[in-house]
Image (cartoon, rainbow, N blue to C red; front, side, top):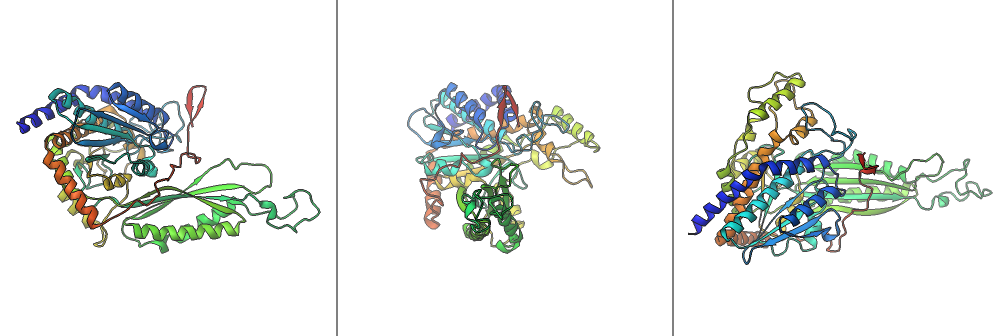
Length: 521
């Protein structure tokens, strides 16, 4: 009886996705065109909150003190509590129209944000799975609770660590984490043993708030603290440049040259333009680093902290430090991976039809490439088992390394059994001798309905099938929880930030301004 209910409910959910795909596609286009950057996704978050309330969910807007986050819940009685989530932040300087040629979204600068991953389809695809599951639960009398969180600023690992610290993932029985594929062999599969690693991000703010004390004897007869003819404090900009150059030079001394680690920097602007000769009072630089483990991340932290301390001292400034994120490596759950992949097998990989092929061929033609009969990357229309993907991934890694790249889903894996899976986004085959396509090509393919809708279709059905299995087969939830508890006991890994940690929403992140109702950058 349970198996019949399970099969019928999955068929109901799959029909819901198919029947609502035109509507889902319109929703995706809306979020994709909003293209709001991290911590500033006001319109995107508002859209999700309104949509979920219209679908019968109770929604907390601005959850955990984050204005562009939310937490939604719907219950159909006693049963497992399952969670998935939306992301919707875009990346500055990547604006791209849904077009076969390079051009920004109409009405904004080319330096405005765009969806590169694209997080727009991440959110709408998981929403499809959520709503399809809800529909099947209502139609077939399946009990349980669905939770759905809005996770802003993923590019900064921004919200999941905060939601976790504030208890939003507590009492959840299982979590499904989705991302459009971004690297082979992780395409149309689930992660097995190798999860994402540690990620740290920190802003160092240099403040020169007493420049008059730099050299008190420079001009003792002048009532002006920094007269035009006197020596003056180097100031915050000098501290920033000392930090920047020293840390760049020391890259190779921080970590091994293998293992997939990275250290990135970004200078945040605070309106320093001036025509006077006063020293800059404030300068900020953000460092973000991805490492296979916490020990390596802490090594980089020690070097950066030391560099910052000495840079500030050299430039007659003081320093303030602000954590942006501090994420632990992820925990594996084989039970969840097997349940998810069995449903992905049931649905099958995305397939690109004649219209999508014509669009891809036009892009190739516009780039001076001979159009291919089958222009899409072969792997995007194929499944690969989690075990085989794991084997291929391990071939690219040193034997000692357990984790690869970073993504903030890892924080969720420390609160409940979690599966991380990937469905293909459209990507083109490389032309012989041409190398990679320009970045705008994948950005554009992520916004063209004919090429991106198959991702929504497959992902929505896969999540719904996975949720229905977990709701109707309690032994799966028990097995996943048993594995989760065992792994936690074998390797305790407490949170890296204090529960009182506040999200860094007030720093001068890239933002839109509104001019007479028109979006400009």
